[in-house]
Image (cartoon, rainbow, N blue to C red; front, top):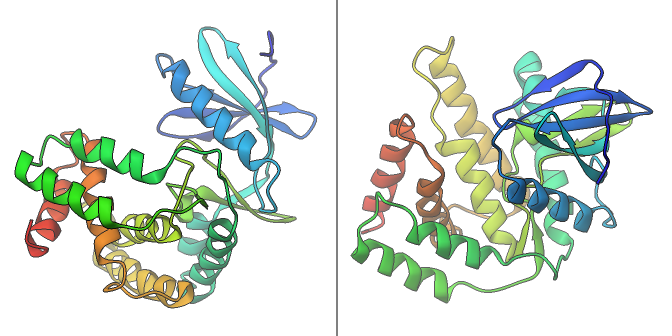
Amino acid sequence: MVKTVQLGELIGVGNTADVFDIGNHKAAKLFHLGYPESAMLTELHNSQLMNHLDIPIAKSYEAFVYEGRNGIIYDKIEGQSLLEVLFETYDIEKYTKVLANIHKRIVSAHLPDAIDCKAILEKNIKNAKDLNIECQSKLLEILADLPDGDNLCHGDFHFGNLLVGRQGTYIIDFMNVCKGNKNYDIARTLCLIEMTPVPENTPNQQEIVKMKKQSADIYLREMGVSRDFLTDWLTVTVAARLSELSHDQSTEKNNILEYLSLQGL
């Protein structure tokens, strides 16, 4: 672990961390005070598993501590998120194809040493307090019948986790990396594109909702799968997502519970 890091300009702010330029084409992802060291080490482990794969990532190096905060040193990628580019251009077709093409590269890779996605889903379904025991049992039966695999699954793949730089488009955020059947990761991305709500006070809210649906349709077309084909994977994936949501994310919780009800759960 690096003992000292000299932080430069703040270049990014996220829900769990800030990103600083540290020179020599490197960036420091500095997690917020109190962020668990175990979670940081999981991200470092996952990212280093991916360092040797033939996919475009911000390469990770080592961990460090700065004023009591844990961090990871990465290659610095100068650019915008694909989400920012999408909202600047409104070229949904073009940039959803970019998303899908990179995702196809991800799920065609294999990562046998990573944690299994079905273990993560099982844990999160059991921890979802919005689901009663009967519903959890049915979901776990569906999960058990789904196929295994060792394909690389990003676990949080969406427009905001791609950086468009001068040399290309790069994948970031490796906290949820796992292995499994590729349709888990496709279902997870579909959930993040289509089922996450747009806040009511957002300008052009209805236009953005329409964009999300259009993007989801293009994404599925490019990935070569249908919603019907993904039904079981999507069902267990959205149910597991309930364990991630806080009390103030009631709209998304209700959307998920309504979807599960339509599936007879």
